[in-house]
Image (cartoon, rainbow, N blue to C red; front, side, top):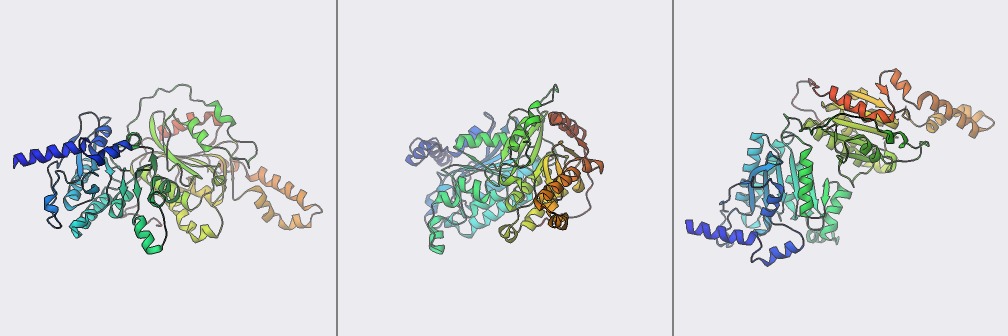
Length: 513
């Protein structure tokens, strides 16, 4: 028996390092790594400890008893990343295409159980064609066991998924429950049904890339949060993403040493155009405010009218949610509301403070938005902010109109500190629209309606389109100069560092799904 194990192990190792497998060599030529190579790059040197190395499947149908591979198509274990304990599983595409069997699932479940019990992140390197069809319901049950653990771990430990090959049917739902998904461009796919089934059922002809490739899911569906050009960059992004997070929901993300000095940023002074109708890039304000080169954007190419991501402020990890005037003038719509809400929920789960930058003219009007549930989806963002107990600081740079002002982390829904630049306009709507409604009769009766409209616009703008009326009511804590923004934010988050909130005694809230 021992001789058999040693022989099988030697065969597996030979295949995994590419010595004798034409298929693996072809994958290497495309820049695709093996399961063990991926783990080696991900974990600190010599830190990985494998669990379940000798496990084999128990299927004896369709000739499966003659096809035994130690580990059964998945490498599982624990180790450290930058000195932090992390659990990992990497599916092995060289064994049955990474298809999931009963024992394959048991190995993954074992890792997830240990991660939950020990309060450490779990990372899945997914490369699987789905359930192993030779096992029937046993493989389906294995998927359900994994999904159940994903759900139990949600909000308890960070769960990161890398899609590093084709992932179909059941293989896509576990990543979908995790916190973040990274896909490798041109070599990874996610779909519930593949192109052949789509053609049979709907008569649509579509390629795997167009149906479920990295570009599709990063721009159209929003399923994936990040994409990487190859396996190496994917693993680098995983490590960087993890660096902004704590080990679990009971801890805070680790600070990076930082010494306060001159925190004024004069370049922020000229970033808002004089004409309030002209767009600008909110990312310039983000980069000018946070620590240098620390902003790590999430969902970059999806719902671009809102920007979300992680950054550091004076060495401390924060989450950022910001309207983007460069895209759709920064309005809130169905996709941006869902994107923002999901990110806010994650940050609140893991004690990551939130900085909200506001320049929003309202919600996007139209039948398309109404028919696709802008009411319910907009309420998701409202609910997420209202329910969050982490430190929450808001800065209004320009427009904050209508209900969108309330939704974007206003003082009324529990924000801790709210600042505004002198360029801020806080009102029910823009001056032109408001004047057309309020002064409709007066304008119609005037000798020159166009001139009278301009006159009323200026009157409304002077009275409402500024931050001072809101500040007088206490809805804005301070109107600050742009150059002083970074210093004010550092002090605010420092003051809020030990914030505690007692929530109502309930099982859980019912977010509008």
